[in-house]
Image 1: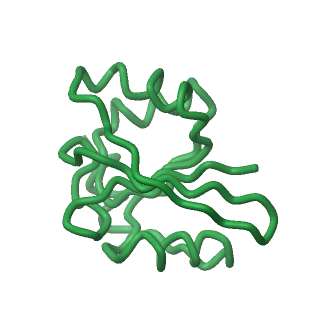
Image 2 (image 1 turned 180 degrees about the vertical axis):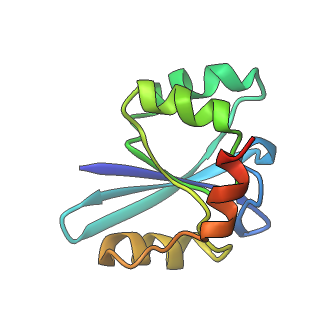
Image 3 (image 1 turned 90 degrees about the vertical axis):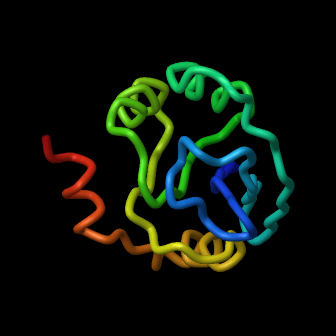
Length: 114
C-alpha cells in the first residue's frame, strides 16, 4: 500500500510545500483509493520527515520544495515528485496511479541549482 501526500492550498497543489497547512493523503491499495485531509503541524521544517513517517507517508507530490527538505525525506526513504504542475489533488493522484505524473524541468533546475 502507498500513502501519497499532496500539500494543498485552496483545493489545489500548494506552490510551496513549506507554506501549506494541510495535506490530502491518498491511500492506494491496488485499485482501491481512499483520501482524507491531515493537518501539517506548524514546526521546524527539519521535523517534517519524522511527522511524515509517523503518518505512514510513502510519497509526496509537490511543486516547489526546499532542497534541504529533499535530503531529509530521502534519508527516511520517502519519494518526492518535484515540479508537478498545480492541479487538484484528485487529478494529480490519478496521474500518479496511471504513471503519467510529469515534472517541470525548470522547477527542478531552480531547486537544485545554487
